[in-house]
Length: 416
Image (cartoon, one colour):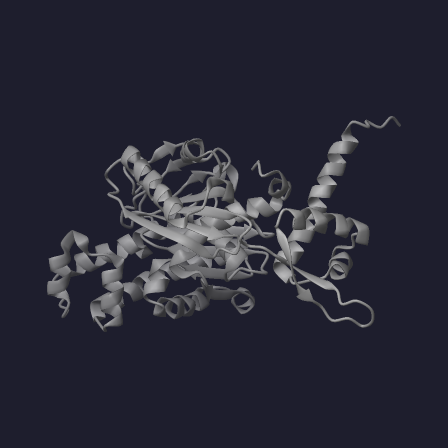
């Protein structure tokens, strides 16, 4: 057999990269740890561990953190990850806002920004608002671009993650086939990643929230729309043509109300923030009485999900009943999702659950009625740990994930 020796250097480099990533992730997740502990856990030779530690220490990626216990001889030096070695910009595109944040590699915020947008203003105007809020937080942070590893952006979907294109955001005017990733990357000259908002939230929960340590999870977000992020074997499952996770467009009633996507009877048309606000207005037009009637009517087009949930918390029976009915229908979509995927956990997040936490128990009650006992007993339905920040923390997390997957970029300083 003739071996192609030209393949060996590439394989050797790949193995070195994998070993480095393994050591770095161990220090980040379990540190402070000693070199001996690293060698024991990773099964790498002690000299190999020493070489990797030397590389990482010289660049300031890891630092010493005191001494460990000794059973004889010198106390071992403990090593920990330096989360301030690099920083990440996260951008969240919402229906009425563009939010941005600079975080360190532990997702701790350094600077924040928020600009209100008009969803009918068009893609060019909204893009300029994206640039504006990024520029503002860079200035506020006092960081140089050399200190910033990359930019993560989450947008209403569907999104082509690989091509960096927003395919369609139904609630934003002219927000179709926008090459957002490349436009932002060209302006700032650093690694830029784009993801659907619900997928970003799932990645955020995986790294820093309720999905940490789990393998297979569905993360459901209820904001003005409804989105889902599917984690299989600790990786986002995007499906063919990046369409997986559009749980908000499961058909609940084929003759139901029209959804923003153009179909009828989607889950989103019943249980999203927009649907809840619309239902309040419809009930008022039907003549349903409520002590909040005057306030609702005064707000008119300014009525928001937050207004409705605040009223529900204050005891308004119309708001409570509308939310309960939306939660009951949401539970149907969740039950279907459980039967499709049988995940370890369903994580429920977004504005509805953040603003009105009682929604979680209502949903769980109705899911239990509709899911096979065997599934329900094994699967946990839990709240998001990141709450209303899940999307933007997720946007940061996907860049942090990239950095740890491609650890050689930490040494070269040139993102892939």
